Image (tube, rainbow, N blue to C red; front, top):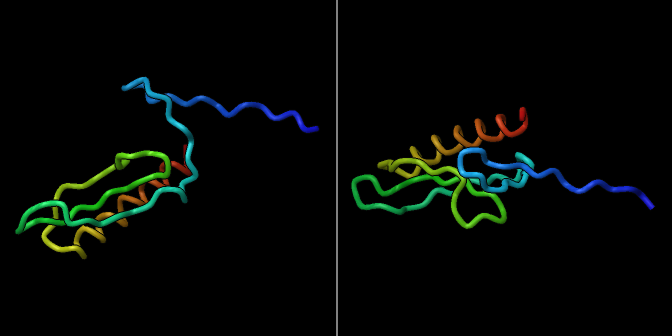
Amino acid sequence: MRNVSPPRQIYDCENMKKVSPFDPADYTLAVKSRGRAPKPWRWEINVPGKNKPVQQSEFFETMSEATRAGKTALAELRAASAAA
């Protein structure tokens, strides 16, 4: 039988909450209509096991603007997570 060590405990130092390590591929982008015209669109980056988005944007006029900005933010978050 293999000796398996327990997973590391990671904490968010600002809020002192336990943060579980996620694979960068676990992060997903969602673009939603959450506001009123003229800028109803916003993007949110989610991760499994969390009810609230990890990141979310300000509002955009079009879905395509929000999608472009969200894809950029998702790529940056995945790169930062992979480097950590």
